[in-house]
Image 1 (tube, rainbow, N blue to C red):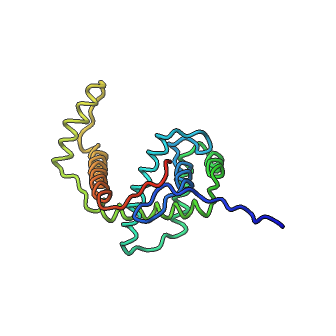
Image 2: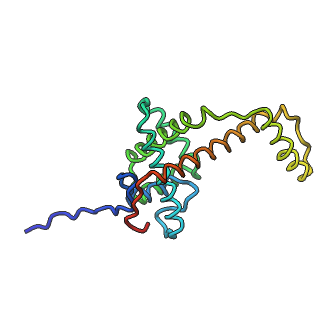
Image 3: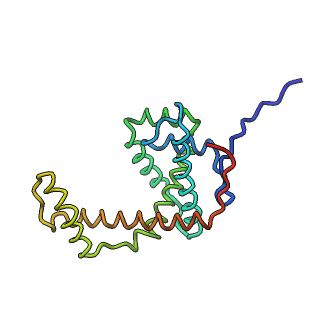
Length: 199
């Protein structure tokens, strides 16, 4: 009598509004993050917990993004996103080794990237399109932050008009981050987040 092949069951770490987050999801997310240690090595519990918190936020945004009618993600968008991701690693071989070390297939990478593209589109739609930097905010940033910092380093301060686009981008980026943080705090309060296992 032959034994049936054993099937490996992935460990469920958490439910986010009834959507499962598994240990594989966590390891895959670490593999695709150039700032994180390699998931093939020994990982401390703080690193795992921090990444799991990021994943909860991603799931909440992704779930909200799914409610908004949007165009399908095109293959060329995924290809571009993959190329951008790989550039963040020392080389493509390092990225491939990290992915393979946790069983992350090319197909699964594309699925994760498609989800990230939808998240980016949601952030653009929900936050970026409504954020502006007033002339007064730009001037205040220039006078109180940039000028002071550059003078303290002994550098020559450029005229406001030459740095206006950069300052505008910084102010808008800060505002978007604050809006996303506020939205996520509210989303977490409304969400049903159930931890099932330690990462």
